[in-house]
Length: 148
Image (spheres, rainbow, N blue to C red):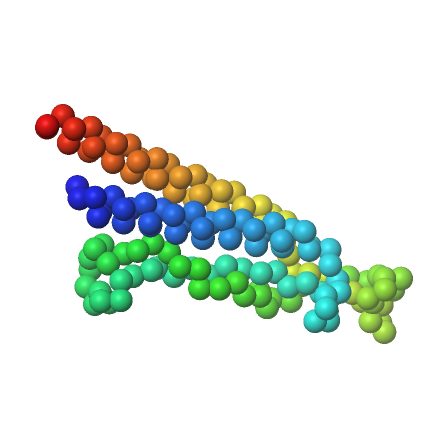
């Protein structure tokens, strides 16, 4: 295995670590705002979601089935989930409309916890991959030292 492949593998794992860290931050932010019925933009908080895409070398032909051009993952962006949140009847709430109904954020605690756990597991897998690449590089260097 060439050193270029080892470095490529570490870059791929590092991009995965970055992407999953952002995903965990967004899920934590969603949980923190799950009771926010008023935002500076008006209306209740809208759940945010992270979008990923495969990072490829620019020169790679998209129809080519090869892993040589893979560079990891890119975070395309963080966008609002536009599904409407639940509406409850609470005429005493400061954000109630004329009929006494309040629109709540579209954040579901179960969904956010699943996102947090899956992002955490993916983060751990990328960390383990980095550790494996480090061990491989150390073994390669010790073999090279033994050839002298």
